[in-house]
Length: 266
Image (tube, rainbow, N blue to C red; front, side, top):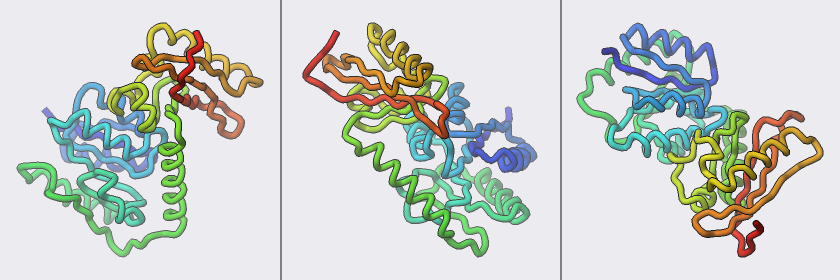
């Protein structure tokens, strides 16, 4: 039975390039084009190796890797960060959590390097390396525009984590894309329980109807900017505020804010 490899990258042509390279080495390749899609592709169980870009739509790569480590902790999956921003994130590899880091570069050189890398991986008896391993790829230097992008992403990540209320970000299909630590504490669940989970499954049964109504109202009625109601999580009254995510005047999902309260309105 062939080994399985999961590729997660929003660049279609790069996914095809890497997929073809791995298929030639005898792998069954599973393709995903964002972090949420990658989590969905793992619902049937682990794969033998994962390649992921460091900047992905929807689920952040750090959340994605954290999810994998928690879900498959008994079966360590080697994770390769194969990205155009490896060089700019060299100082953050301890926080990212991958096993190997390979900068994207010219396809001809990358093809040789990846085949050499896979040959070494396949010859190893155990995973992972004793510490993160960064593979060089020629004379590649940090780029100012990439550093500025990463700084902006880090700033927005810090806002969500430190905003002072629980935050759950929900995609158009009503599945969870992101959740901050305060929200996890309020609902008493882990990131593995929450990421890519239908948002209604996280709410107590009697409040699911209110939640679904709020999601529909802010999505379909332009004049409504938010809908609030009270929910009880683990006997704690919690004010729940549902707002649409607006991107270039299009509603692309929802933000749900959770704030514990002493008051409880039925």
